[in-house]
Image 1 (spheres, one colour):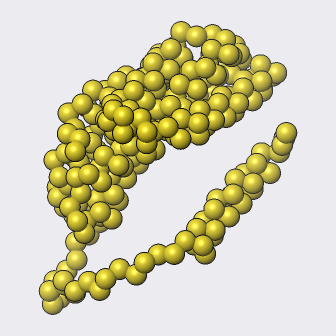
Image 2: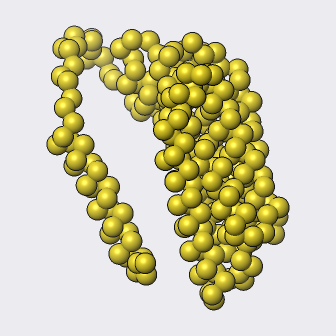
Length: 252
């Protein structure tokens, strides 16, 4: 509907700004209680690296295990975000290069597949709370990770547009659980007064795996002759590892 890429990016930026300002001006924030000054004279403050290492070291054991499991989820998701829009034109539509109708149709279909992912995420999210109450948070998230792992691995073998859209629908289930349940699991193990610091530390295990994935997976794809479907296999294996590591986390 909107052929100009510049227009799309302006719309995206506008949506982000609108959401940010809406939150800033409409959401009340309680003032925190006064915190005593804990600095000791002229003692130097920790630098970024030291503070980060101390924050990770102070994470409860169950939180650390969850961080490691969650990092594999985001390693796999980075494979999807980086390569899916290339995977669909070349692997599904048979495009050669970046010119021609096959490539353009593939890119458009990839965007529709992302729409399917988000629609399923939107629908499934409404039931996550009830499912967690009926079973457990860990069980529901394990199911979501299995859905993503199966969808990623299937992408190496499927060759039709409808099949890849169905696969992305299953990814949407895992996307919904990944955006919510790990944070709920982590909050069960955080010491009082440390929630903000620990949640910030948890985000390290989202960002760092993405950087690592971006550095490594392209090299793996190149080693396999540029077959971008290999990136989906790597992502699927990462999701399976995430699900297995999640089983070691104790849930209250």
